[in-house]
Figure 1 (cartoon, rainbow, N blue to C red):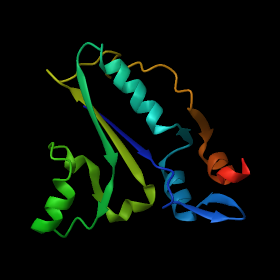
Figure 2 (cartoon, rainbow, N blue to C red; figure 1 turned 45 degrees about the horizontal axis):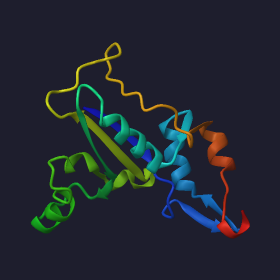
Figure 3 (cartoon, one colour; figure 1 turned 90 degrees about the horizontal axis):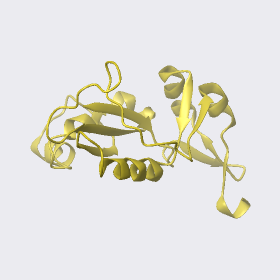
Length: 157
């Protein structure tokens, strides 16, 4: 099973200042701890390309994706279980729950697995799916990205 983690640029990590959206400091700290580079892309393009490849790919694969739910992992009751661990109803819910300690990462996850059999390596020790080039994809050094990203409001574009 392929297990991918990404962060979502959403209003929970952006704040509006001087007619621009600025990344909050807690998110900056979380990303700096994660790595040297940031790949930014539009989710709808990734899912579209993945879906197109899925139609003809051999071996057959499936995928599921969702934002992470952050919660206190020491508290469990029936109501919380049903709201958090049963929300997707497909057995993958535990992959989409993480300790509240990591909420600043604002993650989104993608799981890819074989439909008929477990996916076997296709590229050395890993499994690869070629979805082509993400037109919206850009790679930045983490610090440059975090210190220079400014999203203007649509009326200012």
